[in-house]
Image (cartoon, rainbow, N blue to C red; front, side, top):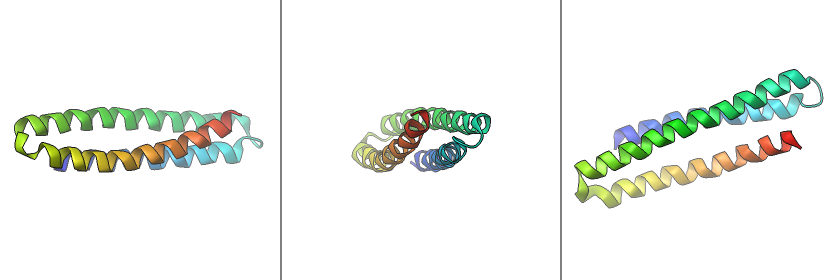
Length: 102
């Protein structure tokens, strides 16, 4: 289960960067279009990195459950708690990204 937690820490890093870049894109939107586009693109890339890490976390969760079926409920509980937080955070980032595109 430590691997799952470690992966979610990396997911947090990616989301933090995605938010940073989305905010920078908004700040530069009316000032420097090319820089704003760069930041927007970087924000999207960070979301892709997050998704790759998330896919790995799902695989790790399934492997953990397969190895320790008696801990399935606990593993799923931990995973869902961590995942719910990242979903909320990603949704906030998507709002910034959408505002940039308006």
